[in-house]
Amino acid sequence: MKLQKNEHRHYVQQHLNQSSKYMKDGMNALNTAFIANGLFVLIKKHRTIYKPIYIYHLTDTNTDNVFVQPRSLFVVEENAQVQLIEIYKNNGLHESFTNEVIEIAVQQNARLEYYKVQDENENCHHVGTTHVQQVGKCFTHCVTVTLNGGTIRNNINMVLEAPNNEGHIYGLYMLNGKTHVDNHSIVDNIMPNCFSNELYKGIMDGSSTGVFNGKIYVRQDAQKTNAYQSNKNVLMSDTASVNTKPQLEIFADDVKCSHGCTIGQLDEDAMFYLRARGIGEKQAKALLLHAFATDILEQVKPEKLRSYLEQKIDERLGVDKL
Image (cartoon, rainbow, N blue to C red; front, side):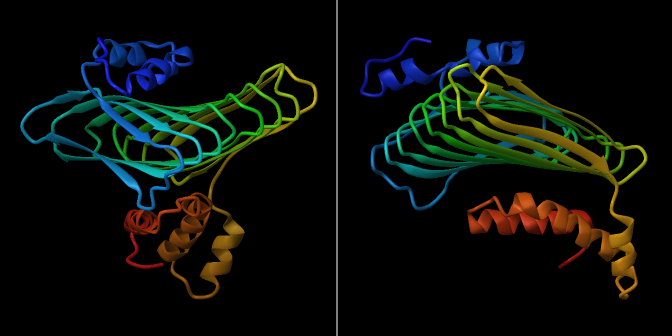
């Protein structure tokens, strides 16, 4: 891609395609090979964006199959704050395939909140890479919510390149039918005194399948790192399944790191407690599942987005109001 000479050229030269260092796969390379244009957003120094920036990916599959490869680059400069929200929707019943890459560079004392919501039908397939590069000491907060889709692969990389960085990654996937979702995450601690926290939760029904593969790197110079990772899943049917593999690769000797995963069904004692108080089985399940998802929903800071997600989850659980 030939870059035009303008005031933003150096941002593109410095930060575009940083994800290829971690995503050495054909889909990332394909997206890069076909870059002709894309979305570039710069949040300038000392700016606070008080309203969220929404990016809507609306796929029209009414008349034909669709293949799209969106590419985005966000740069958040020193002392800036912004909330970024991506929403994926579609109309129509033809097949669609989305191969997306979004790269975000966050600089000194900046604050980024990033939210990704996937709510497409079973004919929509998605491979997406979100690459967050914490260039200076800053704060990042990322949440991915998958409600519907066909075959989905979500890659998220968080690279802590400066001392004292802080990063949080959250995910919620509520699957039904034959939906398959892969959530792959990388948290790379390069410099010392960084803190990261990662929590993914899954609710699987029907014949859906889920995968969680999270990896935390602690490099040799990243002493005093605190890094935590957890994946929790509830299976609602005998035909639903999940595979989970949290991983740590630690090359420093003065760190605090932990990881873990759980797979199970709804707590029978909790179900009995609710049923014994006159709550129907369907409502009792809905209450327990809603409570299970609350840990992630509470991490969605924009009020309107959180209300939208709560409404969609209530509809999925089959109740008008909890």
